[in-house]
Length: 199
Image (cartoon, rainbow, N blue to C red; front, side, top):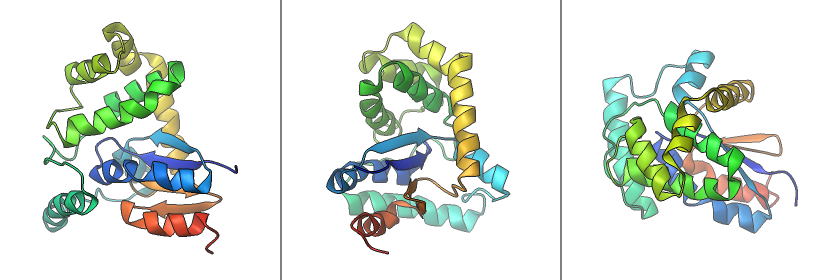
């Protein structure tokens, strides 16, 4: 086995939700691990001087329709989120806290957070919603609140954003492996090709 596939993503990104359902199989085929790295895409784009993709009304309309169409294409349940754009900082901090203390539960928490936001129409910027998601995953309320509001989760997310900026991450999802970057769920076939030796 060689180096991992680093997956940079924002919990508020529907395209990351779509990609999360596919990347495991691609990694397994290639004998790779997936290293999940939640970030705040708005903060990364701001650091790069890139305008948020949904600021322009025309692009917003396009993306909202494309999100629904893409969910159907990938065969995934989907409801328009309660709000977009949205800062997913509490969800990301929660995930880092769980990943640091109970890494075996971190993968299922990704699925639970995406399901809450993109299927169950719940607001994952609301700490009470996140406490409920965490509770369903077997995480105590006090621990969940500490992960979301304490200094450790804040520092872990801040560091991840800095690393994403340094790695020239330009969107969510963004896959980095063997010195190559692949932006977007639509790049998964190309990522598979690359991992099979394509150059």
